Length: 386
Image (cartoon, rainbow, N blue to C red; front, side, top):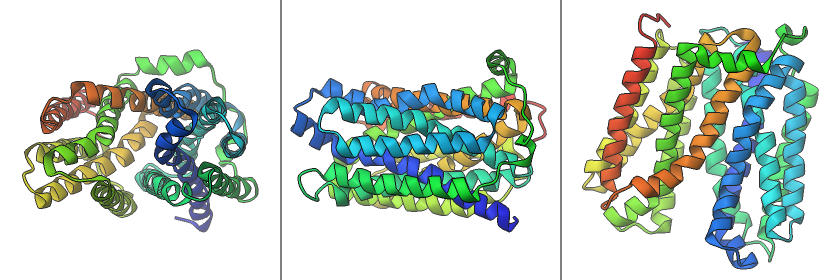
């Protein structure tokens, strides 16, 4: 990979990581907001869902606009919007201003689709899994640093969320500055490409694109369900408290960084087969948690799950870029990211509704569904050599 590509990927890493840091920042603050503004559980749920709901709307739109006007302008405009969302959060003195800041952050956070499209533009098919793995590392870094940063900063003064918002806003402004001065527009977008929304919707008539999006929906619903119910599972099955669960999440985060920063940066000979392996490994991880009777067994199951998630997060979007027309790539990736955001709204509600007592039974059902998703991907790509 050339020096220019490495510099570009460093900037893309910052763009995505600062978006996910902002997403993670809101999680520790929810109890504080509930107490300070005396809000109902429904409004707290709305606050948590606002970011993903806005991303669901914005990701396809920003991806499509990046096809028409170029990747860099969309990355710049949306990143500046993120900075403004943090300024609004820092000044917010009411629930509705905080809610508005989360919506604005979600709308501008749709630039992740443009970032992935940029990564696809500057890489060959052989390099693409490595590029997507770097984006995946940015996700993992943001998810780890966001809650950690929030936990450290919310305790400062009476308005800890303002301090955290200023820090996150500063990081986003750094990403904006580097994008403005050091990120070059991919050469193929020096000339305008043709785009129509009808053409993008028509992509769902493409069997393989539709298959990938369906797999993404199913996988992200299950994974977001796992994230929202895991603490209950460990409390029920092992008697773990918040501190012990935080170490488990840190363990999973470090594994994810290692997997996506190392193993998945190698281009596989067959993307379909490797993605199926990732889905099956995720299912085995859930099956392991379903049967785990000790901490050591649980740690092994989480390691297998992390391996599977790393494979899917790197290779499924890589596969999508291979089968998507270049002129509509940003729009198609935007739809992919949009349905993923929608899944992160559905997942927590479905998780709490579907998880039986004891909770480990639910993870057994997750394993079965993942097996079906693996079959769906294989059928959808039957006779495909990629």
